[in-house]
Image 1 (cartoon, rainbow, N blue to C red):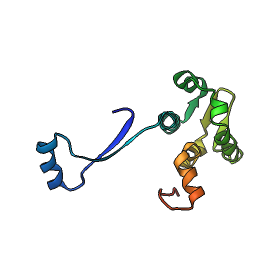
Image 2: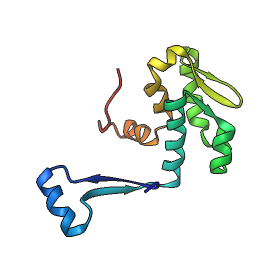
Image 3: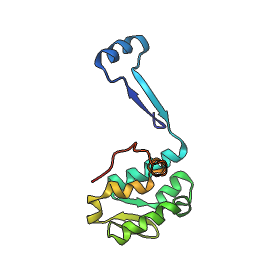
Image 4: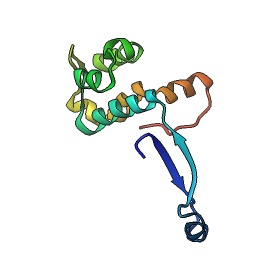
Length: 128
């Protein structure tokens, strides 16, 4: 399902016993919000193609990229100063140096990571 994530049971025996009984072995799932879907698209484009074409995102999600992601763009200025990204009017591009740190660059768009940092609870793995 495009708007959700699901995780199956981990133990093989439990998985095998559940399939005949329920037809699926899903242990838990998460329904994505429209914001989750938008951010997934932005992060995927960045990680897979090293570029975020703003107009493409705007058209697909009916948003103004620079307005919606104003805090993230502000945060990316540090990465731009470090030579990791190039912030252009119509796109965000990762530099050759930035490819080494691309996960760090993508973290700017991760709302849950930002919220976790506010809570000071270690929930997600760190890079480098």
